[in-house]
Length: 75
Length: 197
Image (cartoon, rainbow over the protein chains, first blue to last red):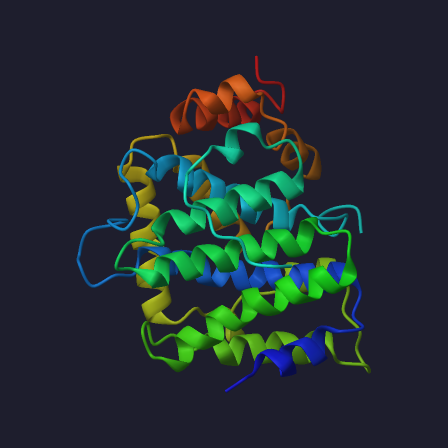
């Protein structure tokens, strides 16, 4: 299994934009896993009253990651 | 960056004005699931906030550390077969791509390259992806715009940096009014070519 140290070694020395882009791709892949559970009830693990705001916070975090630098249109 | 534990929920998201604020708000949100019997949701949320912290940090070491944490979460779940999606191979493939000395890739080309090998996501992931989107829509809080936004990312459509920046500058009073109002505001930004009126 890929270890933390190995990932760190492979990221160290790369430019920040590439590291953030790598991170953004990890987030895009893992985001839908938020829905995975064995209870059959979506998002049951979060307070119903706070759920929309929590999801919005996470989606904005993804937006921040992707919007980090000029790598979107201005590169 | 040290891990912080939150015992009380305060709405950092509403007050967020910078990338770092939004990253911290997401980290905060992640810990909302801490007391539940579903640590996976919390860990996934932390991974997403770690990515944002990597992006928001001005310190190179912090950026690397947070990016490592974000990636390692996916590897762990692959290894434990909880969801049985081979994230690890995709991460290894990404690491090879960005470390290929003979063919250096720009961040733009990398972010806009297919998220999955052969441009084909695993079937299990696709099921989760569609279920996640449907669950967002079912909340009836205007999350349809986020479904479209996520689909565009998967289709490697470049982001409009002007719109993205504007959508991070939502007034506090809008965010304070809840997700439905916030999403309606962003939808207006899109419809009116980034002017919310």
